[in-house]
Image (cartoon, rainbow, N blue to C red; front, side, top):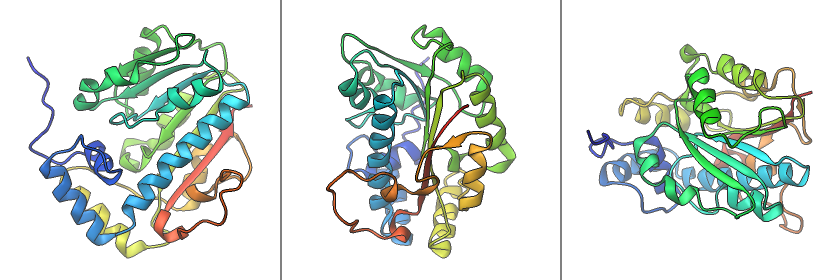
Amino acid sequence: MEADLGQDRAHSARMYDFYLGGKTNYAVDRAAGREVIKAFPAVETAARANRAYMHRAVRYLAHRGVRQFIDVGAGIPTAPNVHNVVQAVEPECRVVYVDNDPIVLVYADSLLHGAPEGRTGYAHADATRPDDLLAAVKAENIIDFDRPIGLSLHALLHFVPDEQNPYGLVAHLLDELPAGSYLSLSHCTGDFAPEAWQAIVETYAQRATPVQVRSRGEVLSFFNHLDLVEPGITLAHRWRPEPGSGPSLVSDAQVSLYVGVARKP
């Protein structure tokens, strides 16, 4: 039986691809995306800021000796991906991508071509079922759970409302990682443009996709019992900008995305 790719309804991964200027989206995704843009014209800026943060965060971890990465909620491949970034630092880095969207599975082959010294894999699993997710990752036989791992949860957790226990699932995943592992996440917030983000939440809800934006304090709670890397919880464009990049041309309200990296002691 062929997988249902959901081409008749908007999907968050394809909408994100649309915000990034990608081509892997359908008319229904573009229509929904335009509704979000109408409510929050800077959403494309926020998407690009998230992507740039992800590149800086995993590069930071690779420079600090992390050689294994699990990227949950990988989404539709848009190069450069995690393995492109970290294997440019150290070709032996290993990456397993995780997603539960059937269309991501269709395009997963483009995630699997990395440096010959390293390894990449794709696990089809649901982030809200952490035991199944971990089993799927382990089945790839790429990640050594006795060595430090970089866990990436980028632009994922705002799609996990409180009733699905997002704090519990993050804690569960971290419990399985050895000391010296890191968590990197990004999360949309309504702190700077509450009315616009309420309209965005309603737009996604009308398409059966729950979204819950969270405050800085709520995002900070995902890092309980971890050691935050400087500058702590901040906006995506403010987290360790590239040297010489000059002053940011975007505002905090345009980005509306909290990020952070922390080490498991």
